[in-house]
Image 1 (cartoon, rainbow, N blue to C red):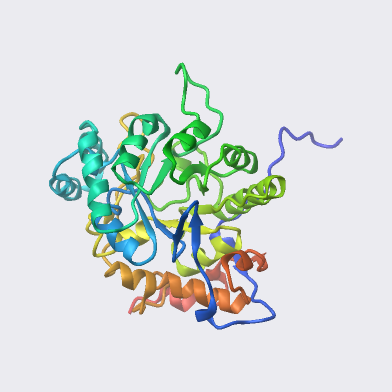
Image 2: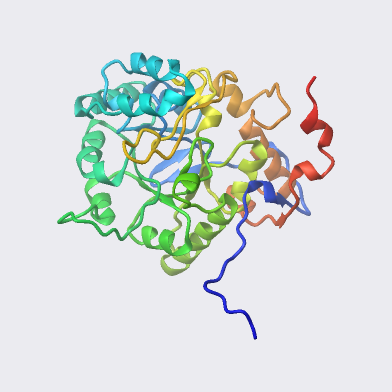
Length: 380
C-alpha cells in the first residue's frame, strides 16, 4: 500500500546551495548597465539600503543617493520619535546583549511625531538627494501623505509579510491601489515570497515588489514563528510572478531581493535568480556613515509582544563608497559589491540585469566542501 501524503513538500534553496554557470560569450565588465528603474525614478546602481535605524538616517540617505543608490528611512523608527536620536542610539549600543531587546522596546515606546518625519525628509531633499521612506501598512494612511508632501520621492509599504488581501476588524483597511492613486509617487510594497501573493500585489498597481521573509542576519522570524522561504527559491517564485504579470499586462514590475545577502557572490546569485535590485542591511550598517556604529537590529526587533530580530555586532569596514565600489582590502566578498556584480555579468555575457536573468544556475554543494578547507580554517 502506498503511504498517503498529508501535503506536498518541495525543496527550496538558499544562496549557499546554488552556483552560477558562466556564459559561452564574455564581455568587458565596464560595458554593463546595472540601472534600476522604480516608476519614474532611475537608480544608477541596483542597491537599496534597508529601512534600519542603524543604517538609514538622513545622513546615509544623502551619501547613498550621491553614490547612485537609494536608502529607505524608517518612519516608525528612532528618527521619527526623537528630536535628538543620537543619545538614544548611545543608550541602545551601550547595554549588554542580554538587555538589548528590552532597551530597544523602551526606546521605541516613545510616540511617532509628524514634525520629525517632515524635518528628516526635508533634510534629505535640501541636499538634492533622493528620499525614500518606509512604514508598515498600519501607519501608511497616516504617514505616507505627510512624507510625500514634505518631498519624499518614493514610498515603501513594508512589513514581515504583506498581502493584497488582509482581514482585520478595521472598517476599511489599507487598499494599496487607492494609496497609489492618491500619492502620485512610486510605491514599493513588501515583503512577499510566493508566486500568488506577489502576483496579487502587482495587480494593485505597485511600482516594485520587495521579497524575502526570514533570511536576514538580524531577522529571527523563522526561529520565532517558523515562517519564511530560502531566498533563491523566493526570488525565483516572485520572478515567475513578474513574468506572468508582464505577459498579461505588458507592464514590467521590478522585484527587489531583501535579506540573506552576505557576499558579492550571494548578490550575483540573487540577480541570476531573477532580482532587478537588492536591499542590503547589515553589510552597509558596517559603514562609517551608518549611525549604528558597528551594530544593527531589525525593524521588528523592538516589538512589544513578539520581537522578531536581534541586535548584532557587525563592526566597521570603512566608508560606504569602499564597501560598494572598492577597492576591496579583503578577499571574502564583503567589499566592492558593484565590482562583483559587473564582473559576474561579464563572465555571463550579460549587458543588462535582465540579460543576467537568463544565465544558468545549478544546485551545487556548499562551497566549504569544494576544496576551501584551508581558507575556512585559517587563523593566522
